[in-house]
Length: 259
Image 1 (tube, rainbow, N blue to C red):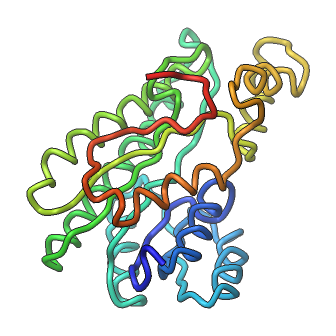
Image 2: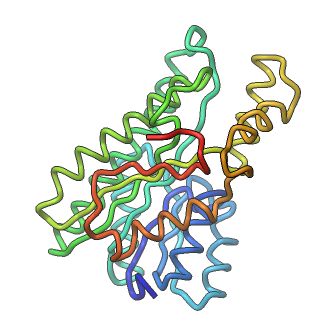
C-alpha cells in the first residue's frame, strides 16, 4: 500500500468528493482525520473507514476560521500519532451573474475557498516543519481554475487563486521537502452540481437537468465524473510516485478543458 502508516487529513470529508478521497486514502493504507463544518456525514464516513481496518478520527471545523484549521491539524497528530498529508478539499460553489454579485456573497466564498485553502497550507506546512519531515499538501481546484465560466465568475476567481497559492507554496516549501499540488475536476455527480444546476435554472430559465446535460454532453470521454475518478488522482499526489511533482494544478475532467 502506497501510503501505509501515513496520516492524512481531508476537509469536506462528510460527503461527495471528500468522502471519495478519504475512502481511497484509507484503502491505500492511511489513517484518516475527517474534517467538515457539520457533524452530519462524518460519522458515516468514519464507520466506512473503520470497516476497512483503518484508524480514523473526526473533527468539526469551519475552514474559514484559521484557528480551527490549525486545531484540526494538531488534533490529527494527537489522535493518530503523526501527520503526513493534507487534502484541502472543502469548498463551495456560487452561481451568479457578475453584475448581481453582492459583497456578502464575495466575502463568503473567498473566506471558504481561498482563505480556507491558505489556512490549510499554513497549518500543514508548519506541522511538517515542526516535525522535521517531508509532507504532501493537496488542494482542490477545478476546471474553473483554468477557464472562467459564465455565471461562475467569482467561483472561477477563487479557483484561479487556489492555483496561484499552489504554485507559490510549492516554491516556498520545496526546500523543506514539502510538495504542493492541486486537482482540477470537471462535472462531478455530487450535491454541489445539483445546486449549480438548480441555480442555473433559476437564473436562465433552463429546465432542471438541462445545464447538467449540456456540460456532460461536452465531455470527450462521454460520461460524468465520479468522486472515485478524482480520488484516483489524489491518491497519486498523496503517494511516493508523485514525489517529483510540485506546483501543478492537474486537470481531471474527462476531456473538457485542455492545457
